[in-house]
Amino acid sequence: MTSERATRASDVAFGWLVLDGVIAVRKKLRIDRLGPVRPYLMLVPALVLMTFLAGGLLYLVYLSFHSFDTFLLEQGPWSLDQY
Image (cartoon, rainbow, N blue to C red; front, top):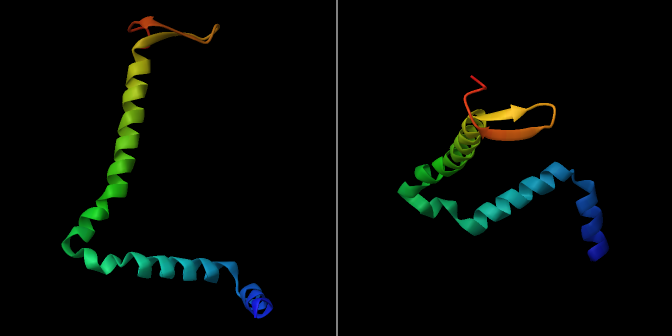
């Protein structure tokens, strides 16, 4: 019986196996029961991405207010040399 299952799995393309896995996970999680909270959960990935981008932007602003020695590749003290 295991050999029959192995040959059936090898006859199916990998993409269909992934799709079957996604469907199985969706059935286990029962996303339909979330109701009115569901649209707000869709905002979570966007908020995570925006937080990550804002953090990177703040880091770039922080670095821009330091002098940088291109020969030694060292960051110097606070200054407005970059501007």
